[in-house]
Length: 353
Image (cartoon, rainbow, N blue to C red; front, side):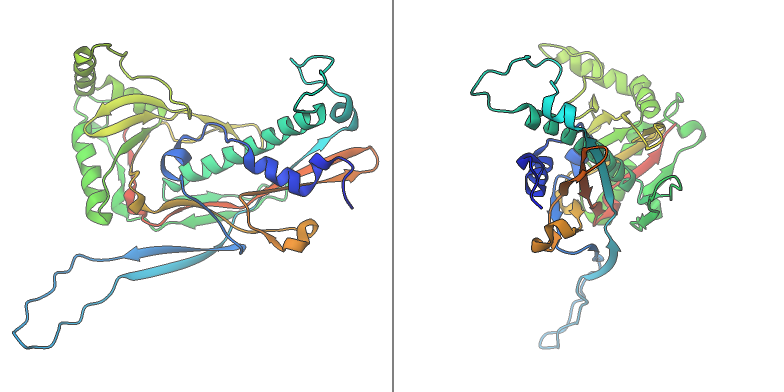
């Protein structure tokens, strides 16, 4: 049955929630910019393998030497499910006034109070979905995305291991830690570059640090000498460490051929407990090279209210329905994202403090 408020139709809500700009999402914007939607609920995750075997020399007029092609493996997963809903009460929806707006809206205004109220609440839902996606891409950098069943709600349990080479996960100890006077950040950086280049032929471009790791990086005397010298050589010197970018990360500087970032942002889980997106003691050496094959794949969304189109091929789907007593309109948002690393060896994870 069509809704009495056109803005609450599933077509309008789906368009609105897909047009909303995401909140600060540094890792997703840095590495997982490519996004693809699918017409199936399952996703096929592919990984390519190619060695560095040399071909032999053969005698003149002899038969050609047979070589194997590039090998590949595929794993099929069912896209994770994100479904959230909120309630629009009739009084605030139809008669409410948003803080900061005039009591009397002049004629000819481009947006109605109903549209504005809906837009704000849809933004709130979209932001919470985007926070979960950012959590997922940060977990992907560790090589494993997993979450446990929450018995308080109908939550799911899920785990996917990207099967990254164990050599790409390094745990420093003792005198090698960055918060010691003997820690050698330059050497650790070279090691990370060699690992990624040897495994998949990509160039490490950035280092993403947790809060404690970032403090140790900036306190390292060799790093401070390099950054201070470069700042002194500039016409307009900047403070050591730079500033926050528009996506919630703190730019620390460019040293050893990399851009260094602190990403100490937290998100709250469903219980309201703060969770670090990047663990305090971790450093991730990553590549923005497209050959790394990072993307976010969205599974199809099945919904009977949009049955004329079958499965919804979209990043997000939204719809609403009316509850009779107490009177309310319930809006739902549904998304099925999964971050993919086709070449997981393009990331080197290091415990540094």
